[in-house]
Length: 250
Image (cartoon, rainbow, N blue to C red; front, side, top):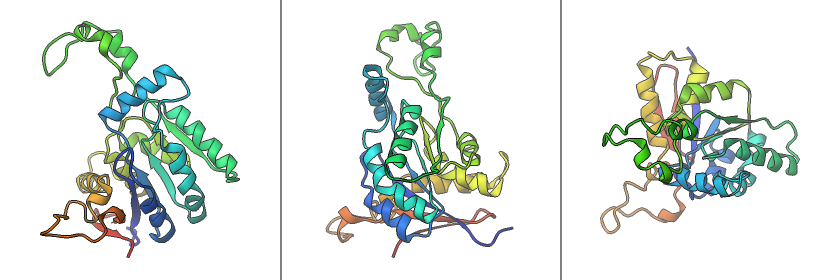
């Protein structure tokens, strides 16, 4: 059993989040991975519409600016990046990251795109299927469907980690799986291991980014948090036995 924990940083909690805290974690947090959670039902639908209008789009519109800001430091400090900024077009997102790395002179940067979540074509091809919530057939809203996605998990992201990629971009995955995947890849927990519960809770906490480092605590006038607009983001130390410790850069 290893005694040195795996350290995973939270780089974003929503699509438009700040990236200065992520850069701070990369440069000063001594982290192994940093994960940017930037996707929700609304944003993946928005990016699906964007891709419909232009095939080279469909990923997080801030991806380029965010990656330009953090990739050089991540490569310098040996920090690997995982993000669902691929949204409705992970392949195009990965290509954009490759171009950014090339322009920055970061030779040898490996980028992986995780595919398989987009099930829109299957849904459109089966209008006779019914919605579980209402019992109505898909054909009742067939012309209004913008996107359909199946949540991938930490096991799928783990396969991308195994390739040695420095940057991994995904489409729709379960939010905590972004953070759980490095743990599974490092400690080789099985799919029935009870420690998965602890790792999943860790992922749910980190996906909230600044909410964990003062955002949820703040209650102006009762529990004031100085400069809430400048909150640092958290990291988690995860040990092989399932222990987790949440912290932030001092």
